[in-house]
Length: 172
Image 1 (spheres, helix red, strand yellow):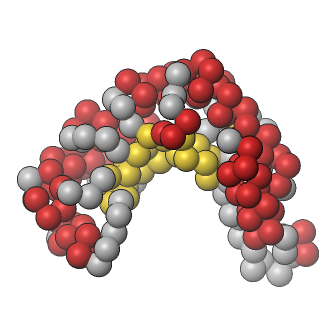
Image 2 (cartoon, rainbow, N blue to C red; image 1 turned 90 degrees about the horizontal axis):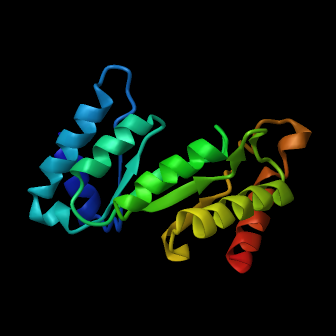
């Protein structure tokens, strides 16, 4: 059934297939590996690049080991510190994948424009200067937070996201 969903997405014009196996009822690494190998055998699906998407890095590793060709990994962040970020980034780069970087660091998820930019700038510097990533292989996600909460302090989250995206595009 998942193959049919992937096929339908490709037929509907998907330019990237986001594959996520984060479900408590699944063996995530096994499911990711098996699914990626299955779609590689389907010519109409295999022509579209894949985004390996998981909050569990063991699932990402399983995906990187199974994927054929270049993919995107979604995601890494500085949440667990620079050392963990660098280790994960090096592994991702070794497989030749591009990476999505979340605007999240040791202090938490960035809410305001400047903080989003600062985290992304720090991540960019580490990835390009210490890990050796090609800037074209780095995708930033400045995290749009919930905006329709009814709480006044949340009403500008959409604006912060757009402004941070603009700053990142110009800055890097």
